[in-house]
Image (cartoon, rainbow, N blue to C red; front, side, top):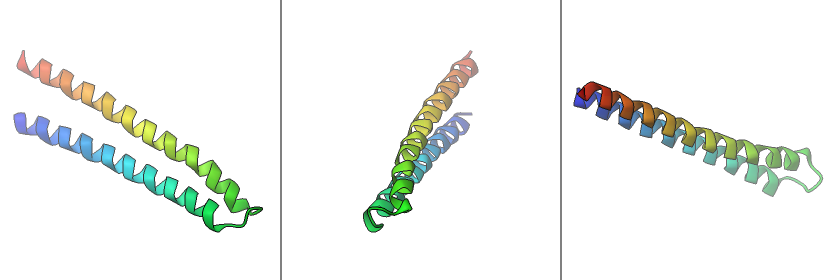
Length: 81
């Protein structure tokens, strides 16, 4: 039973890292579009629009991690009783 909880916790951490990696990739894409496009290009606007999306992905990942962690802790307490 302990190993099941450990696997679940590790999977939750791995999921958080996937959200962080995705947010970084989206942010780098946004900065790249702004850096290498002409100043009057539509790609600059797309790059600026993508940056808040990156922050939203990161915020959702952190929220999801905390939510699942609370559920895991609750299951641990219930399993001990």
